[in-house]
View 1 (cartoon, helix red, strand yellow):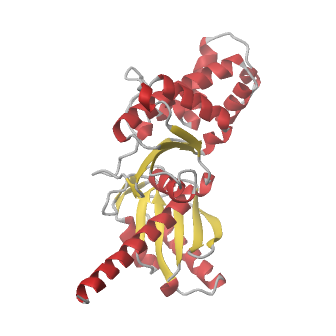
View 2 (tube, one colour; view 1 turned 90 degrees about the vertical axis):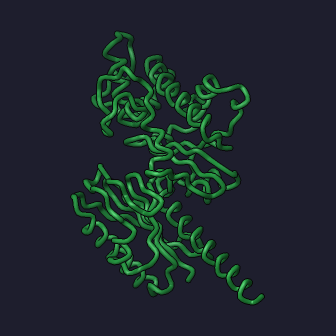
View 3 (cartoon, one colour; view 1 turned 120 degrees about the vertical axis):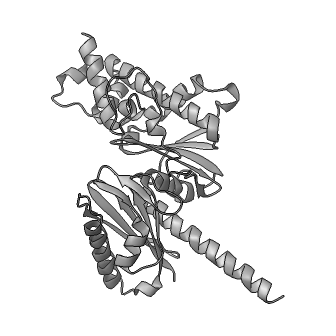
Amino acid sequence: MEYCFGVDIGGTTIKIGLFSQKNRFLEKWEIPTKKGKDPKPVINDIAEAIEECLKRNKLKKEEVMGIGMAAPGPVTEDGLLRGAVNIGWGDVLLGEEARKIIGISPVLIGNDARLAALGEYTFGAGKDEGSLLMITLGTGVGGGVVFDGKILTGKTGTAGEIGHMTMNPFETRSCNCGKKGCLEQYASATGMVRVAKEFLKKSNEPSTLRRLDTITSKHLWDEAKKGDKMALNIAEYVSRLLGIAIANACYIVDPEMVVIGGGVSQAGQFLLDMVQGAYAENVFPHCRDKKFALAKLRNDAGIYGGVALVLQRDELVNKHKQTMKKMLNR
């Protein structure tokens, strides 16, 4: 068995990749995500897509060592998905349900941001490091911590949820999680737009942002790069919050590297430098030289992480078999 699948379930699309141990990714594609309370229609669509892929590549299910699946919600060590708000699911043993429907075993489950971190650690920006903290800046703010190849999960599956650190205890608006003042309310793509609108409303200072019918996070960072003073002020404010949140997280886990990914990270080195600078201003002196990098795998980090999860398990199983063989031959 030398093939495996990586699956990344998103709120809009599901990314799927076929991986060969010898040739890495053979192909990858996307299918739409069906929203609803029942996860079975989504699992059925994944099963159908995998069946079609196996036929295209003239492969049998017996040749597949497993499926690694990234899910948009907290996942416990035993594979329980603790709800997926953006899709509409409640608690579900997703791996077990998927194994029954798809007919491939095992199906290993992880939180999408945590698996993105594992993907970057194994194949991307952190592949030469011993540990990393990854922050994903997209519609929300996700996070993941990897030490010695293992994802830090925690008892309830929420370890690494940096996006829901409280950054403003006086915030009156609620986050999607139900709390108030979360980092996600300011540093996600949608949060940055909200902050930009508030800055523009409180000031009469001229800005190219005022000429736009609709402001996006990309507009904000593009104009900041061009030197627009208002856009720079907003970018600095958001970066400061990110820097403080990363500093606080590093006091607890102290990784060798910080990786920033997600759609907003396409602002590139300009964003990275601002966040790293804000981090350095808000952390102990001996922690200031921590490595910062942009994610390399972009939107494929989740499927790479799913593949890494399967490869890790396969390696552990093989080690166990070798150990048992040595014991029996004594």
